[in-house]
Image 1 (tube, protein in one colour):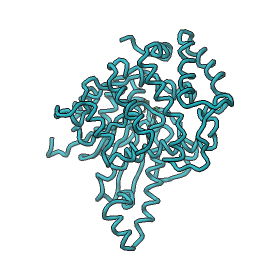
Image 2 (cartoon, rainbow, N blue to C red):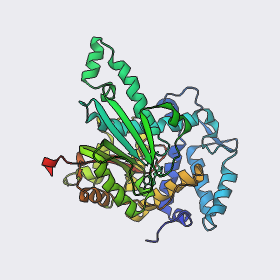
Image 3 (tube, protein in one colour):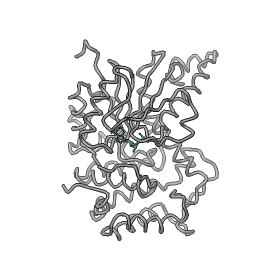
Image 4 (cartoon, rainbow, N blue to C red):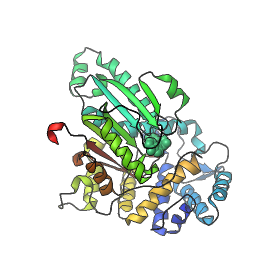
Length: 399
Ligand SMILES: C[S@@+](CC[C@H](N)C(=O)[O-])C[C@H]1O[C@@H](n2cnc3c(N)ncnc32)[C@H](O)[C@@H]1O
């Protein structure tokens, strides 16, 4: 496999099946019915346009991908500039030009919804705690911590309600463990690209810049939950190993490491089904996407069937092409859409097995039953085809 770099990344578009699936993923990004029907934004026109001409999401996706394919052999800086000149009618790189008013809110909310549905079940595992120490390694803008702490505050006020119904709410955790726990949230990253408002807004969130890419600036045995979200594929292999060791070091016994990463597998089995050969891969995927507990990730609606189909087709690709899809998506989002100049692109996506083994070798146990395939779920508007892995640092008596 020739290694992918930003200079040759557009070559992946020359492979028909990679290009087709990427086009469908891009097209899903431009759906507007999710804005009105799922996110409940008002006054959403159900059309999008390209330079003033109404187009379908699929048409716009095809236009962008074929544009990049046409110039795939030019130096990447030249193609990027051409793309920005042709595709961004103004300085705002948002894609849904007809919905600018909603676009930023949509991006923020959809990211936060997905963060919450992925993280809050983990927080529920600590339902009886009074205090919880959580670190987000590679926290980027720090949106996840902002959301957890904001929901924590909203729920705490609901917790004070003494009515009977409010009592039931508490017992069933309908308002969530986030109502009763005090959360100390620590963000760390090699770069400080937090939003200014995040920095100022909340004293419960701390940010520590890492002295290097091999470090997590938190004391030994200090954290209950350690999150790394879409972070490993921006590291070299040696950084990955060092950070996995650090995650083990900073967690308390019984602590949980939540890893959200691009998902690749050639096994044709999801990690939760690895000892169960009774179900076909397609059935495994179908079961997961339809579980009641994942309804927030795979909400019912006209988009669901399409998202399951994209997920299934992605998982049927050979591993090298899964890697192509993830890498292109990464480059497209960070470089072509957001012009992030400090983001490294080593494209170090690794297979599910390798990632699980890396954590096991450090002493973690893999909680396969809590594995979650996020895939191209309807609520993932941006970000790679992903999965959530849960690893636990055992108590001394379990080792
Ligand atoms: C794609 S962003 C994800 C940011 C955030 N977690 C999110 O989900 O929006 C990847 C982040 O990983 C950070 N990163 C890269 N190498 C790292 C390392 N060795 N240790 C910690 N963070 C790293 C980058 O600076 C960047 O903020």
